[in-house]
Image (cartoon, rainbow, N blue to C red; front, side, top):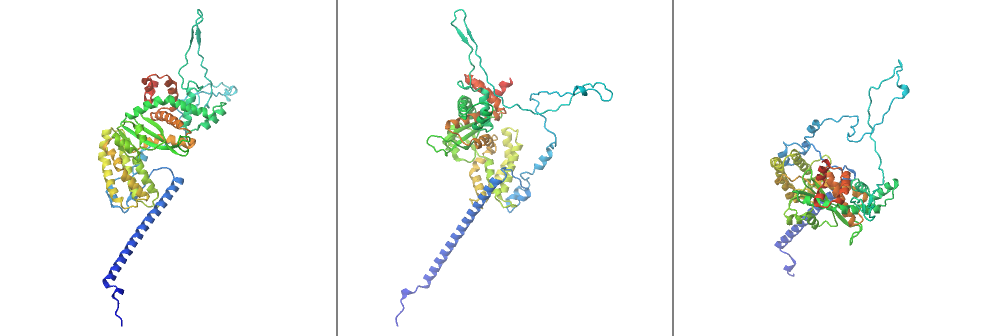
Length: 525
């Protein structure tokens, strides 16, 4: 009988070691499966949220107003209880509604008294001015007055400039001719009123030039869109000294809002027609002396804010775009963030929650609403007084939110809507809390967004600019119109007066006199 080969059998210790290794491998694979399953579930949830947001944007209301009862905020989060004694985001709405006077129903609003009146007299016919009872003549005892709003369509006329000439009858050599007043476009037959009409129609009322061409044809005029476009470019060159004066005024201010939006330029050298370019807007200045400055650039790089801000070293308020970081760092600018943008992320997260459910987004939105109520109370206060109010009421809210953020950010997948909102809030936190240190800093960048909205509306109609020169011209004209509106002026009347007086401006004082806040004083005087 042969002896057993000891190499064909494994010892008990070796078998146990193999079993432990297999168990460890199984555990690793199970953990890997759990990790992958969690990742797949997070991606699936993210895709479902994206789908719901797309459906909401396509078919839902565009408003970002948020309303939820405070009692619905008591979900399974202990930190909500620390804020339980405070009112919800719209808790004061009933009080405010009660304080508002009810609007009268029926009737119509009175027509503005400053409008010119044309009286049309309706008299009783001659045969009905006698009494049918006794035949006595009727006497006029009064009038019943009703007003009807009327409009005169655009009227086209030709202004003939007659420059009288005088000659010496003695020597018959010397001739004196009356000079022509400076014109906005010397070699054009367009008056300041016509230029202003075309500019307001396009840049204020979003009426493309090809439609204006059709309107002029109905009035019997042949004004091709190429001619109208050339006028706008030449007019922008005339307005450039005024807008550069506005830029200098903007940079002297303590606070500047900045934002940017896309624009397409078809024939930019070295770039495809489908390339994305940008229109930048900067807004700042004290109340009553606001500047809204538009600038075109093909790039969205950090070099653009550097060029636009120059040596500015005050306060910059923007959204979360990191392109501002370089100029902030090199100029020593105080960079404040926008709570409206942060809030928007949580509004999106709230929209993808299951119906009837409340969650983290609701709690954050409720707290942000309280921050805005503090700002509403601070309206009319000085910067110092506003700072004191924020220290008393806003700072505790920010501290509560910061503690909650540190705990909650690790509890949600980063790719979900609420995860993205929380990570955005965390990334922007240093900028979002700057307002606590300076009463001059507002909560959001809404002034810049409101200023850029007319451009966005116009872009939907005219779609693109043909050349960079045209885009720069649009930026200049938008600057003049929107700055006039920001200072409470009617842009058409202001633009016409600027076009009349700017060609004759010889000094910097002449140009400064045409700034909206100075122009108003000149007109009133």
